[in-house]
Length: 240
Image (cartoon, rainbow, N blue to C red):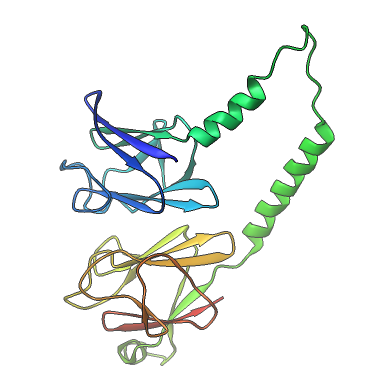
């Protein structure tokens, strides 16, 4: 099983196995990093079909992978994550084994091992086509169907938000992409993550609960066309 090894001043202070999504921050979560440079909800790691992806949650000081600042990035065995003064190493025994099986194969008597370049090129072209299709896909939108939204618009038209970012944050705080009013709404209350042409919504915290079609949402939930989203005093409708 993959895991995160957390170090402070080269000393291991925690090992966290990744059996599902995990959160990282100064206040609560699976990995708690008590340091002023770490945001309350700093980053999270999601798991998609044996792929491990780290997401920065619009932290103040950023999330770094192998010394580069990231927004969202897939993790690989041996990657080093830096958050504040903490260093975290991503360990994935399965990935390590698969690499050694390939590169650790026996020597072929000094001969160069021939690869099927046609298959490699085909795979690369399919990947490029996949990326092109993703770029062509128009971003989905959230329509604010709250009564307050209709009255706030001078034209009477619904206020809409394009979900163009990899992760769109919803809440009452300054860092939220979509602002929601309510004393019980957290600064980052929910997040919508775009994965190719799929949109996944997750509750991030606060007293005001997130509902989709009247049902409370905790872990990630895939959004469907015309889903009704409620949080705080706001009601949204999702349109693909």
